[in-house]
Image 1: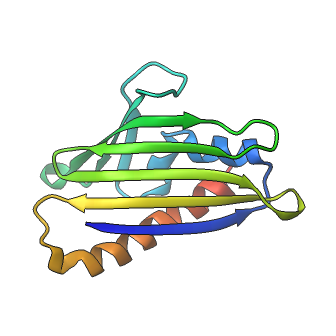
Image 2: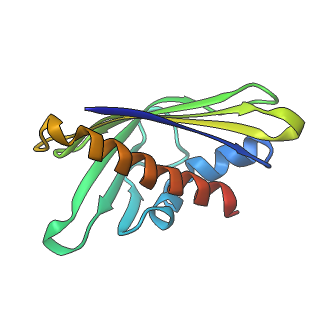
Image 3: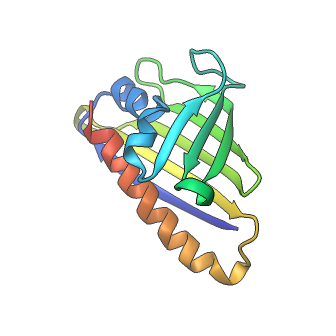
Length: 146
């Protein structure tokens, strides 16, 4: 099990940063070799199921997630979303928070608890570094692209 967090500040209003981070299909554009689908009708709410299919051919796997907390930002109040990872291989959770930042900017917090089933704990260090790198790049891309 690996737990890590990322923090970013974006020159975006709170609601725009939230929109960019929670339009789930956009995550497929931000993470290499990944396609994202939403299994439940929109809009996103508690109970929404998202599936990220990562890999190619027989080496692909599904990261099935369910939204368990959905608190969009309102006015200048923070927003928070929690996803529970319920796939066969990938378990854990992810939390996305947006907070008002200085000068009309938005402060983004991304926390992740990542467990890959057959991977022994000796690989936790590598998994943590890879997770921070992949999710860090994804958050950067999501925040940069409208």
